[in-house]
Amino acid sequence: MKKKLLILIISFLPVFTFAQEEQSISDKIDHTFKYLTGWFVDLIFYAIPFTDTVKIPWVLLVLLGGALYFTFRFKFAQIRLLPTSIKVVSGKYDDIDHHEGMHAYGDVTDTKDVFETIAVEGAEGEVSHFQALTAALSATVGLGNIAGVAVALSIGGPGATFWMILAGFLGMASKFAECTLGVKYRDVDENGVVFGGPMYYLSKGLKEKGMAKFGKVLAIFFAVMVVGGSFGGGNMFQANQASAQFVKLFNLTNENAGMYFGILMAVIVAVVIIGGIKRIASVTEKIVPFMALLYVGAALVIIFMNIGLVPQAFTDIFNGAFTGKGIAGGFIGVIIQGFKRGTFSNEAGVGSAAIAHSAVKTKYPASEGIVALLEPFIDTVVICTMTALVLVITNLKAEEAGMALFQYGTEVKEGVEITANAFDSVIPHFSIALTIAVILFAFSTMISWSYYGMQGWKFLFGHSKKMDLVYKLLFLLFVVIGATIKLGSVLNFSDAMIFAMVVPNMIGVVLLSPKVTEELNKYLKAIKAKKG
Image (cartoon, rainbow, N blue to C red; front, top):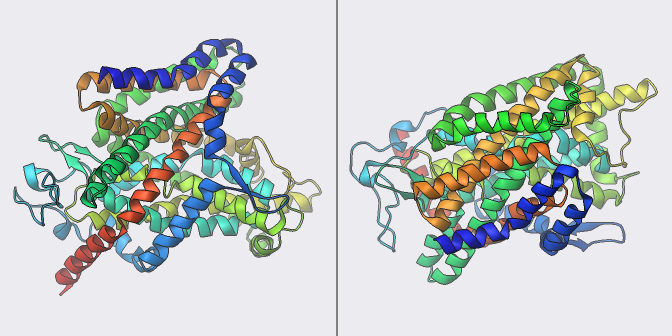
């Protein structure tokens, strides 16, 4: 165990070095880190040339290819099962979904070490369907919905919105499949604590198919990547952007303002993550609906205040989706920007959400897979689309006044600022509320990703309380570091780690897709019996 810990810490040593030297904002350290890790970043985000001007990241092709496969494999589950999903979240089927007593229902897996239903040991999971959904949503609904959409539209134009929605729609099938497997192959200890995610269905599920060594390698690779991603994109980036928005709003000039903000945020994060998934879920079930209502509510106000521009906005979105006029890469460039934003925002296919959903109280794995398909719908089809509509409408209004908020086809660097300006142009001083939303988005993303990283850490190093404490202290340290420094190549590396998770996850989910169908049929049969 100590040897594994040493290897992992050494692999992240450049991060610590960078953090120490970055106090002077040294470009030399950034270049050094890029030199050490740039090959990995280039590999994960390598773009395959499609035309002379358009390149498609291979990881995006894998994500979309998998989403298309699952869409057809499960007969358009995102449409077929959507009404059922809403009923499950509302608690309509709780009486057939929860265990009663100490009896185990269902068969034992081939490995003889876990029941298909986890009533054994008196465990039912740790959180409700709604709590699992909000915990997973809190990790995906965030700055990407505010800043990322603005960047996508600035490059791909209004038409990117259409493809962004389609990416969210297809991603619903991926989330359904991976989260069903997350529950099916989870572990539950004697205290009822759940350990789940791709690490477990890769190792257990592929072992059932006679690929034990291959599954173990994929599981370890995934676990290392999720730990690294939790420190970077799931932590430092969130702290960095929240700190920057806070400092900017209040025009703070103290050079240590970011560090103080980071320390305060680390303390608040610590209070939540020490309590585990139950504490995290109890917080996210309150924060996520509030954030969504605040943000989407404001977006709807802007849309209704400019209702006369809505038809033109939809015309621009639809026409732009199939023409790409004035956009770099033309039609294909618009598609790429839409799919890239939608897919990267909801993380469908990455496997991260399966970790949170694994903790749900259920005896039917497919019940949580059905709930999980709501994630891309809420994150991308609803929230990202609301942002896009606000940007398109306010830009149309600004153009009528002779001064556009931004130019389509010209990439903006500060997506949050563009979105804030769009909201402020209709609702004066809404940027204050947006700053609160950014901080809450960042906070909720961090606490959920801390759980993801912890599950990967436990898979690698066991369930020791001392090892858990090491991870939590490291995570809190990175909150402060992220709020204090300019991330540069560190963020590129951590983002690459998150999307490297796609490779083992997609392999496992495709190979285990027959199990998903099997579990879905069991659950639908139980629902039918209840109705009958």
